[in-house]
Length: 214
Image (cartoon, rainbow, N blue to C red; front, side, top):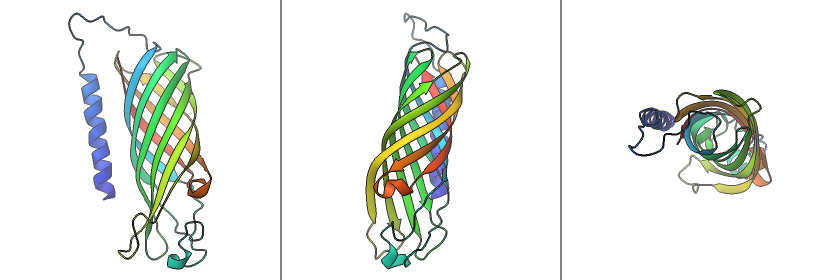
């Protein structure tokens, strides 16, 4: 299941990047400026790898009756996809909505096996201290983190528990404007959840984004 999900993400990213690179102007429309720092909307699609930094155990998961008390499920890493919708407000500032889907963090300890699924929704500000075709940037954001736990046992309901909580997001990256319409970003970030299950589901990510700009 993990490999099929990752394969779908890779195919979507390749399709989006090819479509953006082949986009042509409609006759009669004004030609866009080639300035990589120009103000305007953009959309992006990316592949992401997540490095878990969880502090879950069977007690705070509510699974002590199934796994036993004090059991650390030792979750592995996960992979997924990013969807971005943003607006370059100034050459040095961008505002962006990000949706992140992670296919699932699987347990490597404890019987039965368990899984943590993750959906992230954040509004981010991106600061570009050196605007240009190759741009380092810093980001800070906040929003909501939806997580749910599953137990791989047909006798246990799915999902076992779901929680929605506040999350802060900090990170940075490097953006490169390849053509007038097509750009790429390499981005790293760390997610800090607060309250409920979300506070135990902290993790870092490394993502490759493909950006389309009109």
